[in-house]
Amino acid sequence: MLYDHFLGDSNCIHVIVFSLTDTYDEQIAQIQFWLGVLKCRVQPHVPIGHCGCLPNSPRVVLVATHADKVGCHKNAKGEYVCPTASRVLTKAKLKFSSDINFVDRVFIMDANVAMSNDIKAFKQQINDMRTQIIGELPRSNGFLDAMVAQLPSWRRSSSSFPVLSWQQFVEYVRAKVNPLAGDDHMKILVEELQLIGEIVYLECDASQDLVILHPKWLCDDIIGNLISQEKIIQSRITGCFTVDDFQLMYPETDALDLLQVLKALEVCTQCDNEGEIEYEFPCLNFIETLNGLWQKDSKRFGNAVYGGVRIQTDPDLGGQLKHLFARIQVSLRHNVLQEAEDPDAELYQWHHGSKYCCGEMEGIMGMDRHEQYLDIKVRGPAEGRTQLFYFLEDLIHVVEQTALSVCPGLCLERHLSSCLNLKDHSKNVHAFSPLHIMRAQRNKSNCAQLPDGRTEDLADLMFLGSLEVVQNVTLGIDLPISHLTVHTRRILSNMLDPPEPMGRDWCLLAVTLGLQNLLPGLDSSSAPVNNGESKTDRVLLEWSKVAPQCTIGQLVGKLLEFNREDVVEMVLITSPLFKVMMYEDHSTDDSTMPPPTTASTNTLSNLSR
Image 1: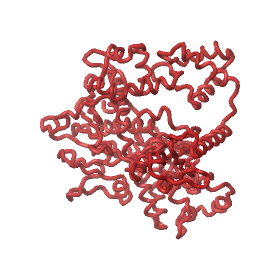
Image 2 (image 1 turned 180 degrees about the vertical axis):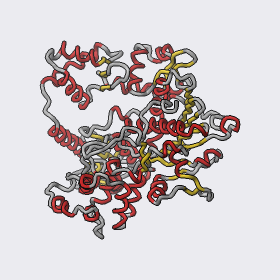
Image 3 (image 1 turned 135 degrees about the vertical axis):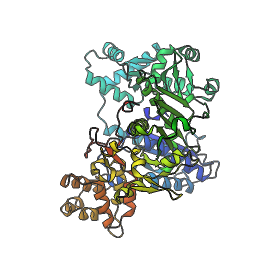
Image 4 (image 1 turned 45 degrees about the vertical axis):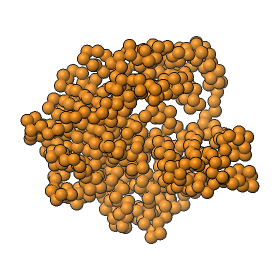
């Protein structure tokens, strides 16, 4: 839930430890989970490398323990070897080779023997990687060294609350370390201190940014204590606390000061409970799903319009969504606070679920029972289809923006829920995949078929039947290729960069797009393949320059000309379904990451009103 505050920098070394006493499937599951966490927390940078590799891939070392328990043999160097561990590394590379920079061996050890050859080899590997990282960074100066020397005394003098506002930090540094330090020097200093793990810098919306002088205090004493099993058992099931309640939980620290830190971490947010100010911690909310929140109501919703979206991701990364949900609930509450002037706006939250009401419109979101996808449903009066569409878009926007902030490397897919199933309150609501919707757009089809044979209008599925919205959108298939997200571009590079037995790779794509003149320059590239720019991405960039209005649909057509249906499927699955053109149009280039494809950038219910 909070790893985004500490992970994501490629100038760090990440060690993943697993036990050889676990079954092979358990080892694979554990390693893939943590590799997925790392992948999701890294902001994809451009230029995209060969086969979709990132220039800022995190460095990872795998360590297998309990070699003595499973009877591993030693090689001529006196180091343990284990075929199972090697297979684990091979499988991890197969899935995450374009996302993770792996060390080419697994360090197998008996952790009880401190001076074994395996421990020495591991230490040497870490030292070599450290030397490489330092060599790639700007050289540190006396300013950083002097600051590091000062930090221990600062921590001792404020042991109960080692936190400074940005202004206080600047004043302290100028008073104790260097009175001539300018604002630019201070920014560089903070970046360097964060990189070496000496501080944590937290951005705040409403007040000054905060500098945590003691990361261990934050992680162990505060976060670790807050979400510990003991604290969860003692806490209220609602996850809501008054300032006095919180002061009793942390008597050695001023509660309001500590709550500001937790708000900056997006662990909690302030809310009003019948006139009393409380702080809501969704991660501590264990209220079960309430009955009667989404039932048939012929009086209020007899002729209502229903709509919904199912947010999904890579099945192997689906578990990331459930860890995001508490942060999504914090964002929802934050948005509702901005709507405080609206007396009809109400938000109810429970464990992995939220319901938001605004006037005659209702929206509900929650995780499925297997915690693999997130469902969002809305309903409202038939005469308010346009307002209901934007109400749904605002809810989706909260989810997508939270995911972009917490897990920028996570690729989300919008699956459109059946309006008919939702209105019938069916137990199993069918969701049309983006592949289904985009194919229908390409085939100029106006409807989609349910498994029971009934058909639904695409305009109802995508725009809740609003003619006003229909007149102001561009369908995904007609969007310029500049709207391809960095995730889609990486997938294209991964599938088309490698040589294909029948020659259906980036080279044939360039020929099909009429860019034969580009081939000599790309083929003669002297840069190493693994470090070079993706040739597929370069081809698409050049095509967008030659034909600025080239669309996703045209790209799909060109790919089908040389029978790459597999690539077409991935393009259609990961591309935006539509773009509402009444908003400021976003564009992308080769040096920036594409923006989210959601249309609304407003707080909840602004457009609805």
